[in-house]
Length: 244
Ligand SMILES: [Zn+2]
Ligand SMILES: [Zn+2]
Image (cartoon, rainbow, N blue to C red; front, side, top):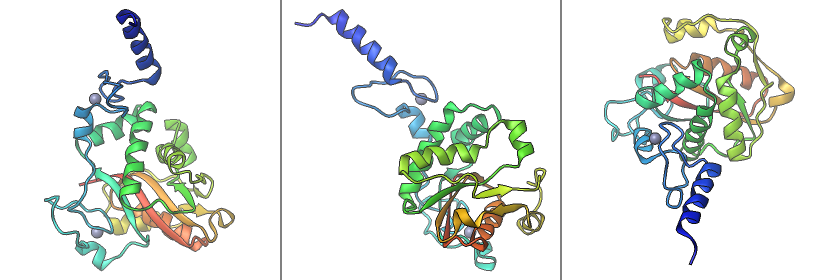
């Protein structure tokens, strides 16, 4: 009969090395039953949006069970990407985690968010692309923040899907200050020529373009156009959250 104390010690040690604490709230989890990194409480607050959004730009409709119809703006001015996928609306716990990750540099949360992105990628059927390309940050922004959140997410996703990440495929050659007050059309105009794609990295490749937040879609649209002009065969986009 094994000694109970020794068993408990062994289990505590096992939990320690397995890291069986919720990565968000720190709650210790039952490692025997649940190998997930999130506790049921936090996982419940991070449910993937399964319906009630525009299939082209993820515009969120009031009800989740609304039939997935293309929104008016997408019907007037369609975006250039082929398909899109996302995890959920930019609100609640998802919003808090993204802000924490992005502005406080909490890279530990990158893994949690990367896993959510991988889940969304599979749910939206975007797993068959040749390469992953993160939306780039300008050098000045990189110096301020120290990292590019889209690249961190793409790296985690790349490992999960076993798809290469081409971080040099797209660069941001012009610094643009925050433009959240501009409408989509003005933003797109302001982004003309801001990105540069390397043909030798993207030619004839199907690309999955990665970002954290979709606001007006102008950045993703300009990046998509730039990649297509450089010879990408197809561009699909994947992001964590859609602003509402
Ligand atoms: Zn938790
Ligand atoms: Zn739309």
